[in-house]
Amino acid sequence: VQLQASGGGLVQPGGSLRLSCVTSGFNFDYYAIGWFRQAPGKEREGVACISSSADDNTYYTESVKGRFTISRDSAKTVYLQMNSLKLEDTAVYYCAVRAGRLCSLRHDAFGLWGQGTLVTVSS
Image 1 (cartoon, one colour):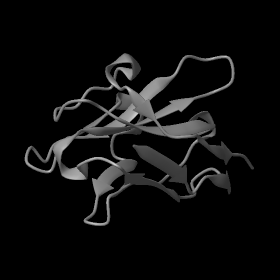
Image 2: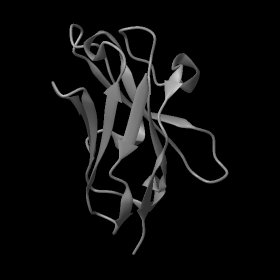
Image 3: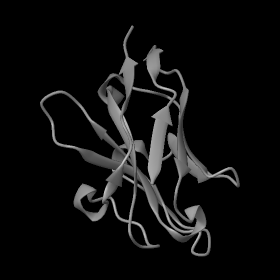
Image 4: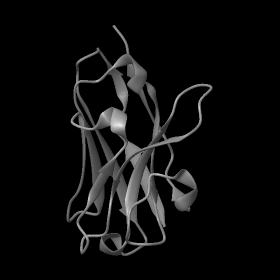
């Protein structure tokens, strides 16, 4: 099982980035996949989650609702489109797969993690 996150970078406040999480080694459609982030000195935080393809639900932490969109495609990739970025969105972002089809924003509900990708929002 592998998850590989990419797409991070430096962006000005108000800008946009799209993160990608390429997956392999498991049946992509059956499991919930989440995006998490961890800022320096802070705990890991659940940002967004997308349930299995059959359930087709998405969940977001309150601070990103209306700005971030999580989606999945047939190429076993999950995206996190981030718009109207704020300074407080600066963090290392991780994707993870849950051993279940329903979503959670708790990091301890996810067992397999990709490496992080750094998002820096700065003027």
